[in-house]
Length: 343
Image (tube, rainbow, N blue to C red; front, side, top):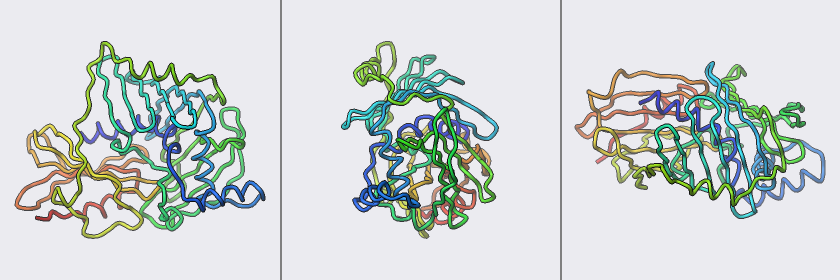
């Protein structure tokens, strides 16, 4: 199960780079600061960098090929993106591995798997995608990261500004981001460990800006489920307190973002609880322990993504805990140690 979740996260990065910087609001002060930065060539703050990247997909249509390098593996996808000022749409086609097509219209996501003839529909909020490059009003970004310009470089034929976001503690990774000079569109992103080594890279190998992408055509393709079995995961929005859980000790900078109850293979619902510091995210998956399905406790790594699985006792019952996040292993340990079962 853990490998499945890691593989899902690896593939979801292909969609994430296209969508994570779009459709999110920023505080008015950041918008004012970005306007000022255009008037005078000075060093941008983190808010200004992220605002510029956030605005880019709202202003430009594009078609490109994304390549993900992670943990010695490589995958690529073709991306179509368009925005009419109100709605944003993407189409992502896998070019390697298992064939699949993912469409997004604002927060609606549907993934078609041609081999199994299954189409899965979800809301973006429930996906727990990694990493969240921007969360509105999250001041912890500037508290826990610093930004420094790193010059410029050509990516996919475009001149790009480079900014490095460095963590101020050992609970998160750093990021190096290339954004196209004129539009601010993210064209390359690296996740870095404490020594500055690249753990994962997502980059356009080919990109066409202002491409002729038809929103009507993408909408028709997204709605054409003929011949597919449509599945919608039975997710129920809930709260940790309602489910009998709490985090006794907060992990600095990480805030709870969402909590859902979902079906599991055991027949009992599992709880998914998502945290974010504005750049990195961590997901808890909590379910009743089943010795027939759950194996050894331990840790796994895929590129920048770490996973921790362990058995725990609470309320007179055994539970199986899975934590997944694009964070160092010690961050997952801190989350696991703070989780408590309450009446």
